[in-house]
Length: 132
View 1: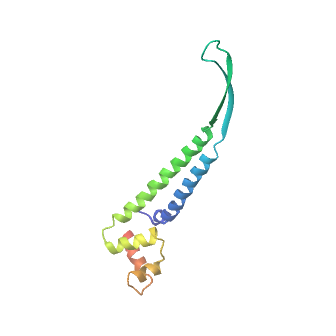
View 2 (view 1 turned 90 degrees about the horizontal axis):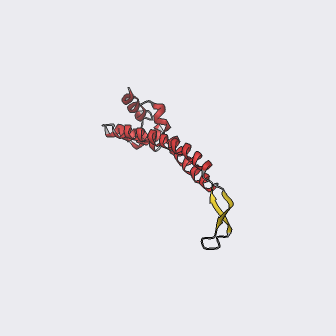
View 3 (view 1 turned 180 degrees about the vertical axis):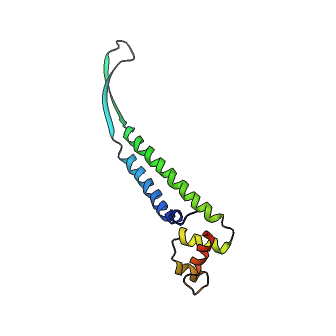
């Protein structure tokens, strides 16, 4: 997997949260539609009566939701691919470096120190060797 795709993980999380909130806002904006229709009395003398109808117009909301759901699925799929790539790394140390860098968003220095090294490029070297 390429580094630029791995770097997208944190942005994908933000995009997924953003899409969830946009979907909720779109549903809240749905407007109420009112109309009056004529019907007849169910019993004799069958006089015409006026019935007031109210409902929510979901046509626009459905269009927007379809777009949002499509983007949500794409982002979730990309997020899953990154998580699967990292979880498929056999070496525990390398897997921890990838998790801390891309999933947790740690710096190379912080990762190296957490791994017990005083060399700031220790984690980056393991990372780069794995990707070659």
